[in-house]
Length: 117
Image (cartoon, rainbow, N blue to C red):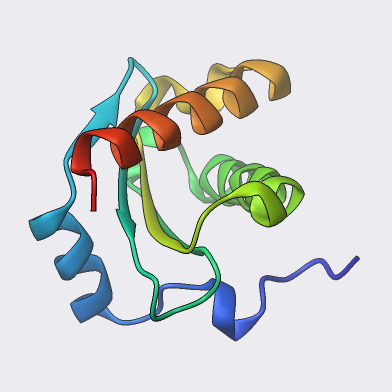
């Protein structure tokens, strides 16, 4: 399995992030805020990450992003064609792998159900 997300599985442009922020309803907990918007035209789920400096130094932020991308890759085949933006809060780096994965999947489902499109 490749360590990177393919181009088809990444949200890369600011306009893609803005579209998701504008149209999707968020689901959140203390560590993550997830915006998910169904996108049938894409055909595959796409991930965008926003990890600010409050989440820690560069090493901690990059580690958190690697963990979130790994969770996404592990579950991508079960996710619908949707654009998913994850905003990590300061305490996200303190979660265990299992807690982070459970929060990601639960909040993604909640956001997709709320948006309903």
